[in-house]
Length: 493
Image 1 (tube, rainbow, N blue to C red):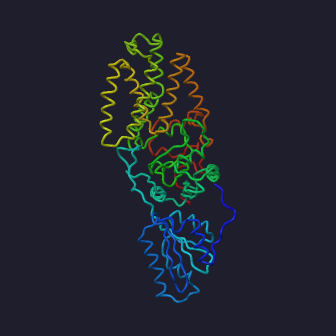
Image 2: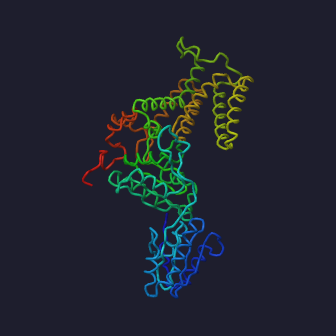
Image 3: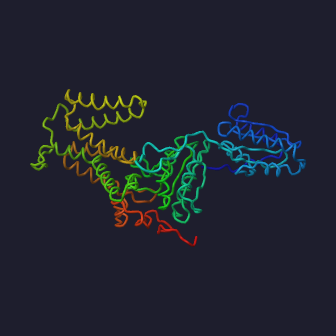
């Protein structure tokens, strides 16, 4: 994101400032741009604000306080100091450039110009429209906190502060987009996160040159991560502050983008996308069991359908005791085509459920389960086994905590199905080998995607397979290169 070399300074002639604001912002054209001219101690004072991003009551309060100066003060020479003292809001700072004043105004702050002085006051009283924090639909837990991120970046950083009351927690604000000027917050713990990682992310954000990122965090991710056409997610999204706080304590860096209810966790691995907060709300034994069941479901979502298709095409691979696995009737359509049609049909239903109003979603589910599936079997389009195994694989897709990972796994599964359908055992073997090699060579901000499996780290792999009790998780993951590897506070700091 480039900055202009020539900054326009605030003029001591307030009329020139008004003319510049009118030209740049469309004063008198844009209905939401508010403007008041006041006479205070025989000097003109201009107040600019955006009606949609400021609380009207606070704007009225500021105007009342400024007008009251005429009744209580008489020293005209100290008018700027008087105004600065009367504006008792928590954040008040002067600015000497018109570009900065406009940027702050468009972010929801109030700008005050005083005739005869070459700076303006910027008052932070922004009040963005939005909803209250509530539990995210995609990361629900049986027990645990029910708050979640919202579209307000200020509230989101506050939710992090509420969980990590450490003076070394940093929230660095940046702006992205020449026109949108979207607020982007970089969150990390100063004495834990790797300095090189922080600087790398900062540099990539600063290099972004675009009009705006209306798609918020997703657009930012595509600039920060050089992923091209890779289907697998190289960052992890979360809408839960407790999940983000846990990763901050491990040494990760969090990116929060204004207008988005999701936070980006960097760096990330394949196994990070398989974690869920529910595991940490259960006892270690039950949490481990839940984790194993989830791993198995994700494994089935990728390999069940191609493996079953392999056995259907080559029944000699089945031992006699498992001969019942194959279908008794092959149907009118090749099994591979049936599997592909069933998988595409499930995607149709998923997309329809997203766009269907909530009162009608139950009816849609009944139609899909009772009518479409059964009638498709009756007319000979599908054999019953295809519906069974496709449903099991689809369940594994929805068990995957990360939606992005589940979609990528399904795409890979379809590719292996096609290879198996055309080339049999050789295609199935080649598909699996290529899949593993593909994951092995992937990097997320220079982080191996299959860590701690490849490269192998015994201690970290133990924590990946088992839900270790909290008293025994005293070390941070080495993959983030933390400054302080021991997860106990330093009493000297």
